[in-house]
Length: 409
Image (tube, rainbow, N blue to C red; front, side):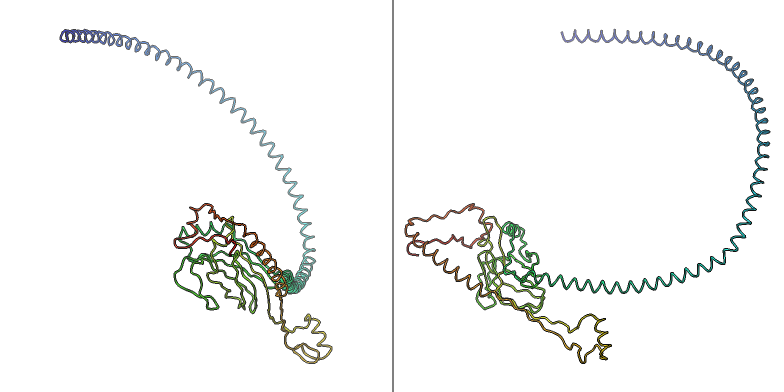
C-alpha cells in the first residue's frame, strides 16, 4: 500500500508539474502580447504629446513676445516719470540744504561766543568737584572712625549683656538625643576611636563660650587613675570634657552625666579643657528613651581682668590737656596705670541649704521605704528586650538591677 501511495503521489506530482509548465507558457505568451500592445499604445501617445507640445510652445512664444513688448513700453514710461520726479526732488533738496547751511553758520557763530563761557564754567565745575571730593574724603574718614568706635562699643556691649544675662545662671543641662543608638552604631562600625559628641556653646556666671564634649571610649584592660590618683574602673566607657575660651577663669562646680557626678575645681587657660576620664558607663546612665543628660552645677566662680586707664573720649581729653597745659601721657589730673577687676560668684550657701533639705528628705524617704519593705516577701527583676542588651553590654560586663530593700537591708 505504501508503494502504491508513493506511485500515486509521484504521478500526481508529474501531472502538477506538467500543468504548471503549461500555465507558465500560456502566461509568458499573454505577457508578450500585452507588451506589444502597450508599446504600440505608448508610441501613439508620444506622437500625440509631441504634436501638442509643439503647438503649446508656439503659442507661449507668441504670448511671451507680446508681454515683453508691453513691459518694455511700461518701463519706458515709468522711467520717464521717475526722471521727472527725481529732478523735482533734487531741486527741493538743494533748497533745503542751502537753508540748513545758513542755520549751521548762525549756530557756529553762536557756538564761538559760548566756548569761552563754557571753558570758564568747566573750570569752576572742576574746582567744585575737587573741593567736594576732599570734603567727602574727610567726612568718610571721620565716619569710618566713628563706625569702628561704634562697632567696638557694640561688641563690648554685647559681651557685657551676655555676661550680665548669664550672671544668674547656676546650672546648665545638655540632653544628648539617641545616645545609645549612636553608641551602638559606633561600635558596629568600629569607630569609637576618636569619636566625640559636642554640645552647643553656652554662657554661665559671666563666662562665655563654654561647651561640653562627651567622648565614648572602647573597652580597656589597662588600669588608669584620675586627677586625685585613685584608680578608674576600666569598664566605664565615656569621658566628659569641659572647654572654656576665657583665660584665668577659676571654677568650682559639679559635673554630672545622668546620675553619675564628679566635683571639679579648675583654672582654665583658654586652650586646654577640663577632663574627667572614664567618668561613667553610658548604658547605666541613659534614660528609657536612649538619651543621656549631661550638665554642670556651678558652686564658685572667680575671674580677674584688667582695664586700661583711658579717661574718657580723646577729644575731651585733648581739650582738658590744652586748658591745663599738661600732656595726655600723665601729669596732674591725668589717669595713670590700669585697673584690675576681680569677679567672684558663690552658690555654696544656697547649695548647702538645698543639700541639707535634700538629705533630710532622703532620710525620711529611706525610713519610710524601710518600713514598707518589712511586708515584702518576694522580689522579681524583669529585663525588657533582654536579647538586645548584648549590644550595650559586651561579654564579661555584668548587668545590674535597680536597688531594692528587704527587712534586713
